[in-house]
Length: 346
Image (tube, rainbow, N blue to C red):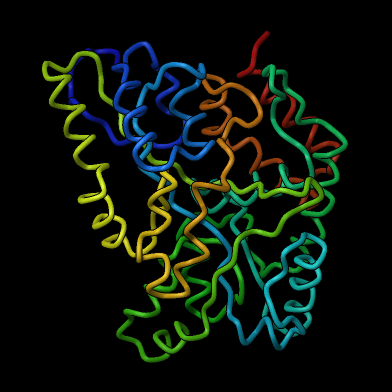
């Protein structure tokens, strides 16, 4: 972006494009065409790549869903015939699993993907880093309620989650150390394709479910978002746009989705009919990840501040501090407020 040289098309994540929107080629015509043809873009995808509500600065590719992965037999043994759909029952399930000696665990370290559950937690109770005017409001009664809930949830976790990064929960799940975590579909496929009979046997017991809905009454999921950007320095802007159009058309994108085995959720509504989502019932819960997700900088406008705050793990660290008891929920929220204000300067 700064040197004005490099690849014509960049595959990026989350709100990175909003760090240098003036360096990116306007692809409004392409995104309008694709949206009209394929049922429209999901809201968060549009927020990420059309930050001013007018000009598209990139083309959404999809989202890597990180939903709940659980051992069905363990959940049933804990007294739950189906996976909880609300936060009250969710906590009770974790408590019951802990009491049975089959605990859960989710990453509280600086994990790029799997610590995203901490954003779900904050949003589920009505908290957010900023309001719609980009005013920092993370130190709020709603956030503190979320942190109090998170503290109770953490008490049921297997020890060690404070330092977990993205690989740790996968390993713990496949080692039979935990019964439930949040992750992409990769745990299921790691078990299904394993050469170890003991690990392979786990696959039949694995089920997936969306995150439960909290007091706000709507899904508040966070997922890793992938997008495609064309820099203005390209000598071949039309060719670059044509390549992205070609790849997002049904003839190519449908096959790409199927090849991914459910790892990436589509950004355009029409691709919800792709057979990958029903070929295996365990794929289906991942289908609506891009549809249900919120952008990382919710509820404000994306840009330098939102990208910086996300990269600094402000929310994840806040939840970890409150959960572990190193700070009270109020103290953790106060510290997060100060950290966020460094990015969202008046």
